[in-house]
Length: 128
Ligand code: I3S
Image (cartoon, rainbow, N blue to C red; front, side, top):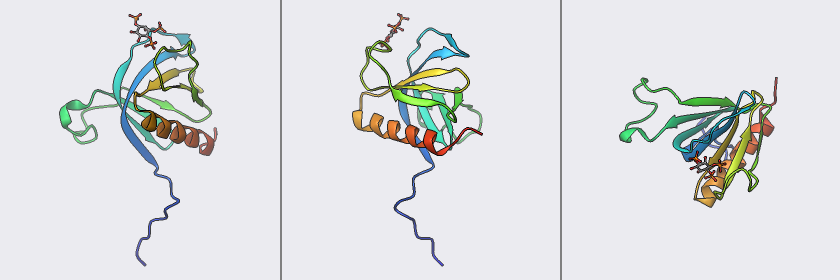
């Protein structure tokens, strides 16, 4: 029988450009370095790649690897408090591995979608 998409199905993948910085790595504070990153949510993994690669697909050539990836399982996602950043629409992601990231966009609709997607991911992908 023909494939009929279920309108209630959530996409397993989300991608877009976000401003990102690490603030903690392996539990240690690191210097902020805000960069515009191509960001992909794939299952319980969040992947970041630098820039937008001059228009060629990041996935295409196979030569480019993600700048870094984080495992969201067992982590947390919250709106960042004002003391974490002076920017607006900032999400704080904490991972089980002791990495803390801030992700941000000037676009409030876009960032709200990410917030929801990240929350969904954390609640549906249990830790072990
Ligand atoms: O939390 P901070 O230290 O106030 O973060 C700001 C700094 O990282 C600053 O760079 P310097 O390393 O040159 O001080 C950045 O340019 C700012 O964007 C950081 O603050 P915001 O509030 O934008 O996250």
